[in-house]
Amino acid sequence: MSEAEAALHVDIKRHDDFARANFPELADPTGKALLDLKQTNPERLALISAHYQQNKQARAHLQALSTNRVNAQAQIAQRQREQQFQANDNAFNQWLSKAHPNYSKGARRNELTAAVKSYLRDDLGMDDKTIEYHYKQTGLLRTPQAQAMLANGAMWKLSQQAAKRIAEKRVHAPPVQRPGAFRPHGADAEDSVRSLQQQLEGAVGERALRLSVKLQKARRAAGI
Image (tube, helix red, strand yellow):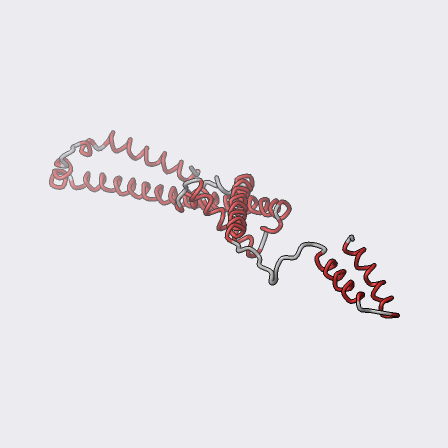
C-alpha cells in the first residue's frame, strides 16, 4: 500500500467515525429518519449529504489508487518474469549447443520442439492449457534444468522411433538378387585349367610351350 492509500484509509475511517457519532439518522435501516429530515431539518440533511459525498469521493480515489498500484505491480512482475525466462532460455540454448549441437538450430531444432510438446502431451499427460500455464506463468517448465530434462526425454523418443523404422526396413527388405547362377570360389580357375589342358593336347612347338606355362599358372591359382 502506498502512502497516499494509507492516508486515504485514515481519512475514510475518520469520516466513518464522525458520521456514527454525529449522525444517528444513518443507523436507521429503513431510511425514514433521513426522509423526515427533508421536512424537519433540511439544513442537517444537507450537512449529512456533504459528509457522505466527501467520504464517497475518498473511497473512489482510494479504489483508483489501489487499482493503479496493482496494475503497476503486475506489469513489473511480468517484466521480471520475462527477463528471468529469457535468462533461462539462454542457459538452455547454451547447454543444447554443447550437448546436442545437431539439435541446436534449424529444422532439427523445430523437430525437437515438436517432440517436446508431444512428450508433454503423450507421455506426461499434460493438455495445452496446462503446458502454456506452466511455461508462461509459473515457469515450472521454463527452468534450464526442466528444459534439458524434457529435451533429453524427447530425443530419446526420437531415437527409439528412428531405430524402429530402421528395423522395419530390414525386416521387410527383399533379398538381393544377383544375375547368373551361383559359382563357388575358385570355379573360374578350375575352368581355365581344363580349357588349357584341352588346348595343350592338340598343340605343338612354341604354342605348346606357351600353353604349358599358362597351365602351370592356372593350376597354382586353382590350388591344384
